[in-house]
Length: 211
Image (cartoon, one colour):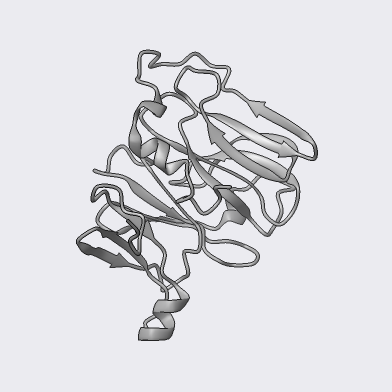
């Protein structure tokens, strides 16, 4: 069967409905959280267009998952983070947290990543609009935690080494580069991420950046 939205057994799905909503209702850009029954909430940060988003366990002190929104600024991006209730809990200027030499155009191809093995998840992204570096960052405050000097054209995230944590997979020209966290896994007995249906479906075409 085909439905308007790819819901999975009523699980909550995030949609960024921006230009269409603005055109129809003239109320600016918003973030909507919906499930199979309809809208749960809508929220905004100064009606900025969220454009690209990533959902994950970014704040262990806040119940539920958080939603990181990049913003559409062509330069000098200003990300913001919503909690599970749709409240804005963090904002920052990417220019103030990005490392020296990072493009002023910001980040693109953003994924949530289980990099450390801890409960808190992180984000990973590449330099925007060029084959450039890749970085792992804290979505809550934007701190860049690891930077990989690259000429990345595409970026993917998956568990390819089998310790359930995820690796950074980069397409650079005709080469495939894979980065693994060298630190010990603090939760080695955690079930494989691929054992969860929601994880497998998230790696399919419902992600803006999936192939």
